[in-house]
Image (cartoon, rainbow, N blue to C red; front, side):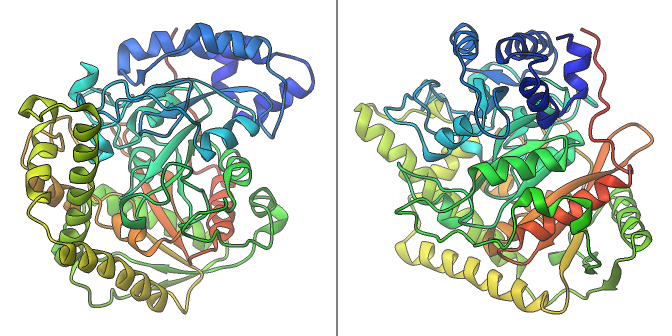
Length: 478
């Protein structure tokens, strides 16, 4: 298959070609690897490549699942896979290996995804940019190489935006799927808490903030992937919501229905938004009006956003201590300042000052956000907000080369509409509905009630059908 044709097709298109015997998993793998090796030289998004092994796997692949046998990439987030080591973006954890596959890695394979590498992340996935020093390279935004592609699923977003793969693994503990989707002009969906299991090595991430999922260029690819990877796994601490319909059914035009959409424009804590961000939101509002949806403006409820930033910061710092101490105990080594980047090292030092009460109060703050959001959204079906508060950040603006608290405050001002949805556990998506005159993507976020992921996907698909977003139009000559 020619690379130009491959880049224009989404995952289900490629799956259909496999079903019709017009291509093979091996041919698709060859094409994707060819693209990846060339584009990685420009944008630096790959790590832990297993090209030869993956080509051999594709050669003998038994087609299965909705995607039958298409190329795929795992995020370097520490998702357990016996085939791929992981750095988790950190020198301390470099080349960590796994004796078992995670439930999610198994489900990806059953869905018909053949992984052949991992994608870059910031250290311990704790920044909305992808500039970890362990890789010896900085991941760049394909629309402007002076800007970040977002994070922590930044490498995955670049791979999808440039057509290397149509779908890639991502995870989201404070916007880490939605932020890079917004920065790279693709679709990023965060499921409700409990939809995608995290076992068998752990039950939750970051006090319940983190969820796994995918990034894609089309809504239907995400819907099909979520149908395949979602669902309760025995022993999970959270029960998966039960949906009345499949996600693929939800994104069919016959499923579209009129919704009452609340618009949230005002930020918490006096955070400012760029004019282009506001313009993107208003464009998406108008699209929904044109589709016949009811639009209502909402006044934000009383909320201490700085207390939330503190709670989020404390949970991350506690997790840094837990991860670092476990690694040091297992390896018998002594921590040095060169093992961790500045933000994570200072986060580790700060985390050691926290008490059990600090952690419990932080988790209680998260639970309060869930109650707040549920009450606020009682009269609407969907809440619509800006995605980011700013245009994609310049490289260096959100890097780990600063104190942990300084970084967390910068992150809070960059993505204030996103992280609280991790606390509430609700489904949300970043929609690429707007582009600046300079060619930068600016996304709008939609948020659903907990357990109504199908409604978020339904509205995403309906907006996508208006052709106001470009699910794929990045052209790179190879």
